[in-house]
Image (tube, rainbow, N blue to C red):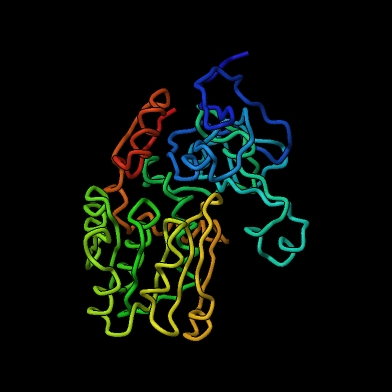
Length: 336
């Protein structure tokens, strides 16, 4: 059997670069994809942390942010042809639970995910179901198309917030997700204040158009927000996953808080009284909710190329992983 190099999760924070057999289509609704580009996500970091911040299945090929072209398709695949360039929605719902029937597949109780629980895109080839595919225009190169998956998750959150031109948003954290929020808010006519302790990441926040950038280790974010707004921010986004308490300090009464970041190993303590008394609208947002088409359109107008800090061969995965862990990278592109 022909082999391919793959990044495989081994459990307990470990991975290996190993030869795997090229996957084959087993169901009529599947396609075989030749992966053109993939990117390392914060979730991959969480999977490889000890203790893990996100679950994953050992011996699975990692990589849930990837793009490629169809080189073979099953007999029941419709609407796609061999040669089509596609991005992949890695989250596969069951289509039969109560939430799927409600039209909320992102809340599916039986969901599985390519690159986390079943083999993903950190390899030259991958098999994916037709459900997961979204066609990409030829004018969008692979290193930009690969942003679709994380961007679709951010677009889903922005839709919940319904930002209005002239509002003020505070983004906590200028990692990749925070930077996407900055870019979309700016494109929507929203004034953006960013809180980020890293000098390196604050530079990228400026590139994405942030109006004011605060180092919370040196300056009181609350004081800055109150000076700029008098009453607090209309919108606050926790793009980190551990800053819920901080959001409540800077949001105005009647404002909106969006919790995006996730870390299952972190516990927080806060006062529910403040949320109730000030009528703060607190929302969670999880993965994409029918927002891949919106994200694909956004690829054409957002300055996402500025976020690529590393463009590596797949065998250099550890280089990219370490750069992200040390916060010396924003977007790491892998070329299988």
